[in-house]
Length: 552
Ligand code: ADP
Image 1: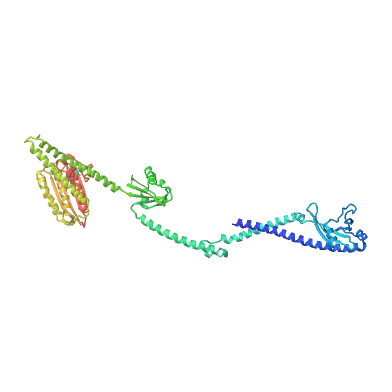
Image 2 (image 1 turned 90 degrees about the vertical axis):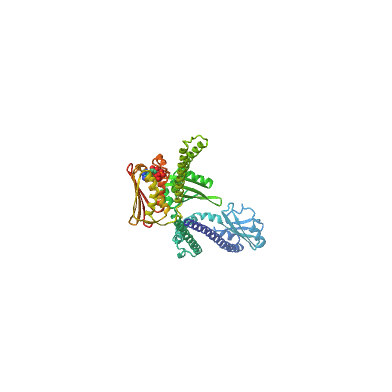
């Protein structure tokens, strides 16, 4: 801007200077030409008077180098010329000023010489004897005068230009200084140029609008951050070019990054090929999802393209922790496969036996054995189905009715329920303890106690012992079942609470086990916020303790 003002000022100064110079020159030229013509007329009058009274004598004695006097006869011949030889001069009768003088008494003319550099003014006057006296003077023309002025004018122009440069520079500085010092943060506080007031007022109102927008934007961002910050799911907003616009804390934890990843390309935050392919697929199809196993667990990435007026403006990525869901799905799949297998085996035995009997291939002696197998396998099926029903009831924890239940009572019922099988195996079973009432479900607690006692008898040796005790420890209630049976090898202990897990499959099956007993124990304890501890040594025995916390 300073440069522009500077250049404009110089140009204006030079243009004004040149124009003024030309105007002044032409005025002066016209003025002096007028004066000269008047003087010339006076001189002619004087010379005319002299010539009329003394004729050639007067003209010959006249000494004037400034003017040229020419005396012309009535026929136009030159009688006298102060600057040339009249003998050699042509007839002047046709010259305009002479012609006018013959006709009107006076005549004048101005003629340029062969070049336009010189101009001659002529004045002629008719004398009383009919002759004409002409006076003339030659002067440089205005063009020549201008050429002659080139040097001084040039010097003046250069000086004027230098002066203009200095003054323009200062003027430009002076003009732009207040503009440079404008405080645009508070436009109305400025006191620069009056002409700037409307502009400053507009800037002020724009400021106010921008401030309002910014405050609103800030409020919305805080709201957005608050919402996304508390989300369990990871949320990443990507621009149409794949740059991270926003990433919430949950997503930062999954990708092992921080807020600084905002503004970076998403593929530098997550480098896996599968994820970049899913992002690409989302760009083409509008949506894509992918599951990835990471050290922190299993995650599902859902990409959704955001379109606005037919143009892709970005992508939303939602990250879900599906570790638990995946584990549940796996367990369910395994469970279904196990249940099918466990149901199929006894059913095949039952069907096979029935088919043999039907085909008459079983002798009368063998018949009781086959019928007994059908009965025992059917009994196993019933137990298995009962156990599955119990487990599925416990899976759906909601709606389990709770009431005050005495654990000693429950333990007594369980002991009585297994007494026959204990007697059959010559296993002594003893119950000791004190009443311990907890808030619980008597059905589930019976299943828990029954399975513990049943296992203690099942996996005991001939003549072994089972000790069942119920006690209170502080506010907690404890039921413990201890046996002197075959025990469990250490490597199996971490898995024996899994559904259908059995240490010795054949032994378990032989003794009517389903592989679900300890799962039921674990679930029943969990339904009462109880904790199960197990201690076992092969060939020495097993001790399982369930502790129910205060308040349960
Ligand atoms: P099952 O119906 O086969 O008994 P459980 O879930 O009750 O299934 O027990 C799982 C496995 O743990 C059993 O197959 C058995 O090998 C072992 N087990 C459970 N309780 C005892 C115990 N008191 N003594 C020895 N082994 C046991």
